Amino acid sequence: MSRIHPTAIIDPKAQLDSSVEVGPYSIIGPHVSIDAGTVVGPHVVIEGHTTIGKDNKFFQFSSIGAAPQDKKWSGEATRLEVGDRNTVREFCTFNTGTVQDKGVTRLGNDNWISAYVHLAHDCQVGSNTIFSNNAQLAGHVEVGDWAILSGYAGVHQFCKIGAHAFIGMYTSLTQDVPPFVLVSGNPAGARGVNIEGIKRRGFTRPQIDAVRAAYKNIYRNNLTLEEAKAVLAKDHAAAAEGAEQIGMMLDFLGTATRGIVR
Image 1 (cartoon, rainbow, N blue to C red):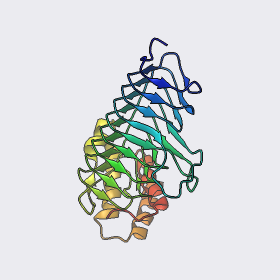
Image 2: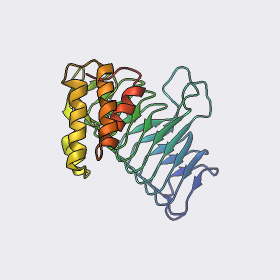
Image 3: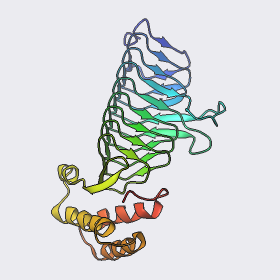
Image 4: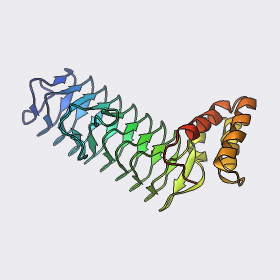
């Protein structure tokens, strides 16, 4: 209990590992579970049916697990799940899900979430992502592993952002973004491949070349989307080292629901 500041308010029903630290004036509700090594800074509110994993760091003034900002929500016991080793900076707001979708909002592992980021109800965020200050997700958005959202990027509800994608500063995103693609602008437009990002993650030359070729077929070779998918399918069958990356793009195109940024 020495790790809990005396001014913090912890509901007796909350489940906190003995190693969890809670700063001054923070409030933790009855349906909250927090695993080992997590640090909750001062003036943080964690409520709702919220599960938080190990070694997370929540900075001051964040609201975690509050009710969804959805007029259809009628008090159902929906959830928020946060994984391990996430850094959540000041003034972030993460809401629980709704029964109209998955009923749970999820944040994976090893994410860097900067100040004033909003994760709305039912968002599904993977691992190793970076959200710069004021990046905003509307409800039901999906974000793949290693994606980066620059400052003030806004994402329309139900959009999907593929793994390793890069969303530029002030981008207004209303359609899906395939894996590896760099988009920016208002409205958003595809600007190329996130080359620097995948180089830093150790992609080999054949893998990078496969991604570049797939991008050209989707965006630069005057093909319809269906024609591009057919070419990607042939390249995927013939590829060796880059097959996984082509497969990721092909699978994404098959599940895009709002059309892709082109």
